Amino acid sequence: MSFDTLSLTMKEWKAYLDRIGEKPYRAKSIYHWLHQKHAASYDEMTDLSLSLRERLKKEMPLYLPKVDQVQRSEDGSVSKFLVRLSDDKAVECVLMDYRFGLSLCISSQAGCRMGCRFCASTLAGLERSLTAGEMLGQIYTVERYENCHISHVVVMGCGEPFDNFTQVMRFLTMINDPDGHNMSVRNITVSTCGLPDKIREFADLKTGVTMAVSLHAPNDQTRSRIMKVAKAVSMKDLMDACAYYAHTTNDRITFEYLLIKNLNDSKADALELAHLLEKNLGGQSPSGGKLYHVNLIPVNPVKECGFDRPSENTIRVFKETLEMCRVPVTRRREMGSGIDAACGQLRAKTGRTDRHTNPSKE
Image (tube, rainbow, N blue to C red; front, side):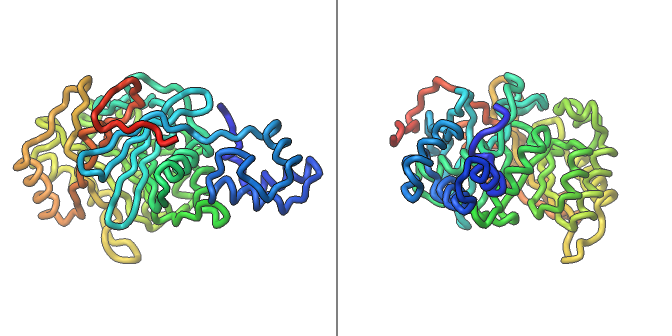
């Protein structure tokens, strides 16, 4: 699918209505129904004439992704949704309950072609990229299903967002639209495995959205063992692009670092990582503080990948070594691994049964 109705901006709705002889002001009503009230059909848009609704059904088919399966963690803090798109492709998104509100991790592609060896999303390759409307649709479907308000979004599910750059940028514009969901850009994070040209292009847009870079190694040799992209993109090229981003936007970059036993988890690795970041992104931002932050993630189990997580002592030493080097660092709160909903585990695997699986509410 190259386009869909939910991907239409307000300007495009006005142009369409003008073309069919309808008053352009109707666009705002339609847009509110779609992006604020999450209407699943035109029949719900009761302030539109019946003739207009019938015409919209024929000319502008409306499809909201359908919830196929829900799995919930033991403590109820994480819910994973398998949602079905209009062409029957399936993607997963994960709802997380934090003290600051509800955050949804959405997918930007069905599958992924980046080939990271620790990630389940890439095992079957890339099926296709999602439209902006299909990304928005994941949010609207979950809000409608759960009767909730999602305040934060992370584009970290299946797929490489910068491999679907145009549609992801359209998504970011639309989710921030005051006539739409009106989500603050500061509540949105986009994650990339590191495509330098797109990082620079993203920097020039100055969206205000947080960028996270999947680094996972302090050097080319180690990174190329676990990330296919590292064979085409050197650490120098990646760090140059990240420095350009940080100094163009004055926004801090989050570097995600997956800790894998006996591969990238030694004290020497931590010292090399600290040197790499300080060398390329040293100095303070105008608002104070570093221009980078490291998020440590002990690797999550994926049967086909065969990587193990380090011991708690190894994780502690790695983190303390970075802190000793004055690297801003946190260990990511681990959520959802029991239902394959944690970092690196999403794959849109269907046909599973699980005692935490909930039947549809429809």
